[in-house]
Amino acid sequence: MNLKRILAISIVCYIFVLFFFQVDFTAALEAQSKINTLVEKVKIPNTVTAVYLRSRVYDTLFEVIVFSVGVLGVTIMLKAEPRSELSEQTIFGTAQVYSSGIMAISVTIFLYVVLNGHISPGGGFAGGVILASSVVLYGVSSSFIKALSHYEKLRMKILENIALVIILSLMTMGLSFPNFTFGLNEAQSYGSILSGGVIPLINLLIGLKVYAGAWKMASEFVVRRGTL
Amino acid sequence: MLFTVTAFSVFYLITALSVITAKTNFKAVIWYGILGFFASVIMLLLGAPDVALTQFTVGVTLVILVYIMAIKKQRRVRIGYVPTPHMIYRSNNTLQGLEWEIISRIQVLEGYHVESREFEGTSQAVEALKSGNIDIVCGGLIDDNVQNLDFFEKIPYLETVLFKIDDREVDYIHLKMLGKTMEKIEAVPSRKSYYIFLLSNRADDLKNFIISDLIELKKTGELKNIVERYL
Image (tube, rainbow over all chains, first blue to last red; front, top):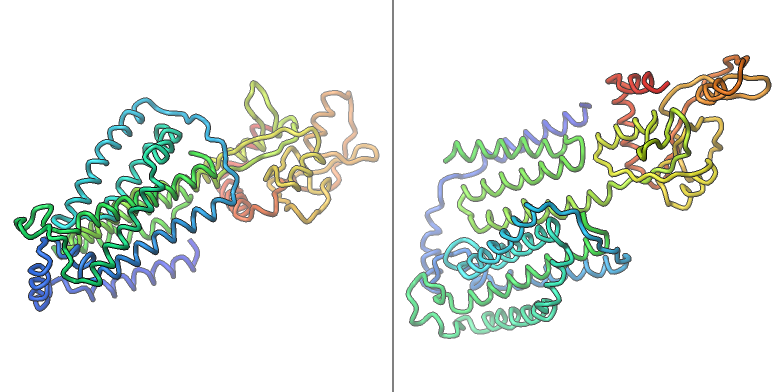
């Protein structure tokens, strides 16, 4: 090991220790009343979702747009490269069985995480990435041609664009009319899925959008440069 | 609580250092996955399960998959060789010889995927190197026999002695080959030279890896073992 590396490591350790003693591990109590007001207003248990899909929906709106632009950039950049022929992969029987199983489970987890995003930890972004990574895993370990075909079959291209349009319109509605809830959560008890109003719907659409984008990026990468 | 967070933070720091000190890119990516896991556990402990979930799915699964795909593709090294006895030759459909042994050691050390291509003469191999079809040329090349051109670089890996026979100079390998055909040769050692690999100028990181691996092989004495086995 040379001197430069030792110096870098010691500086990293020093900064780590410095930062570590700055962390306050006791919960801040003053914010409690603010959180209570937020929960009363939005009527959902997960306050994080209440923040990013209601009181700070503007942030999420641009986050979705940034993600879409990122996907667009990757797709355009990779368009310049020639398509490589996808040949049959060497597949291990067990891996194929397991990856199909994981695929099935992860679709369920996707729906759970997305629809329960306002009750328990989760949400659109996490759910979308769960589905996308499981599809990539399936493609890598079983058959990429099969994994690619579902994108066409389910018309994900159109679905993705529709999702984006609906997300944008719902979010701008929420921004323009702060009390806009579709009247869905009036009769629901606190903590049920429909009590979130449009929030589960937005979460589902964000999940679809993130899934389609992440899968598009990974598949373009494989299609242009070959599988493992 | 404080103890658990401290413990995981220390693990996090250790894995972060492992990422930058990892020998190969593949190992670094695996360490990066472990780093993402510890990060998500710390987030979970500090009361941010939403962020922990996203970190776990993005940082541990998706990014690692994409990185591994990228590394696997980038690690393809195309070798053009001129068949030379003792150095690099094909027998029973597998490549053998001193140079191949060195290249396969480097392949194991760096996790490269080597593809080989046979050439009849050095000039054809150099032409392929110029057009970018191959990355490395080998096959008992000597420093003095190859002109210096601007599209490749010479990497000496083994010292040798040139012998003078009558009015021409031959290297050790060719002297050995001559010894099989001719009865008696009057060979006089004339001067020192090097066996070299020709490396495309476009592959900068490959050059650095090969040079550092050759130093490592020399240090551990493995190079000497290989040379003794074949020459």
